[in-house]
Image 1 (tube, rainbow, N blue to C red):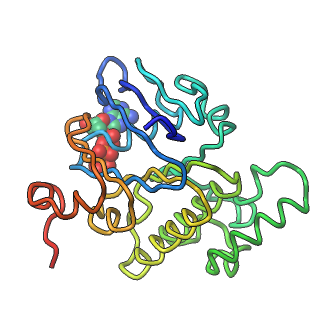
Image 2: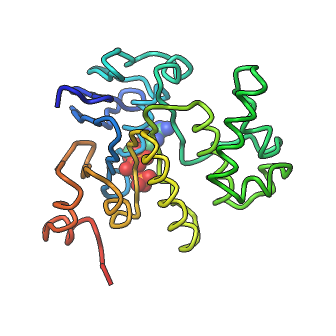
Length: 238
Ligand SMILES: Nc1ncnc2c1ncn2[C@@H]1O[C@H](COP(=O)(O)OP(=O)(O)OP(=O)(O)O)[C@@H](O)[C@H]1O
């Protein structure tokens, strides 16, 4: 796919001398959702961190809109139009919701306020909790603050590491609705999800990672329909 917004080519990365991600090649087209699934320890989070610039690649390439970003520091990666929501340690606990949202903003008060208003409209809970310290929020609410912080950057590509982790079943549904809404506004999303069935249901494409490699990639609907994928990775559907 030559018109992909985000591409990785033969990407390798890991920690110290240990290579975790091997030869990862993937494309994310504009406006699409791709969901990465796979067993614990498969290297899904490491892959996302590598694309985000948090873990340095050993070799290979990452481009956003044709611009090479592999090996750039995370702050420069953010300027490429890509935002990353990590799974943990993703907010400043001493700061309020509102302070978290506005801390990375660009100084123009009107634009910052407009961006905040959009986030508060999307996450009514955050509007209600705007003066609450993030440390006093639930895990799910903190996840929403982190999501909001990423959206303040008006990204073209959003990397989400397990957006539904730790959420109640009701909030999982809400979170996936929000992911779809953000995508509906034209943001391409690469998302890691343990909640594989729900993640694939809202995705265009799916990637199965196993032992640090892309084991399978296909349209999400094909992965959902596949007996092999279902038996190995999706668990019970009941
Ligand atoms: N900071 C680190 N230093 C060293 N090894 C790490 C580090 N983070 C992860 N690993 C190792 O890398 C491997 C892949 O971990 P990773 O978190 O990327 O997998 P994952 O597919 O996201 O798993 P999960 O679904 O459990 O979150 C694991 O063996 C893990 O122990």
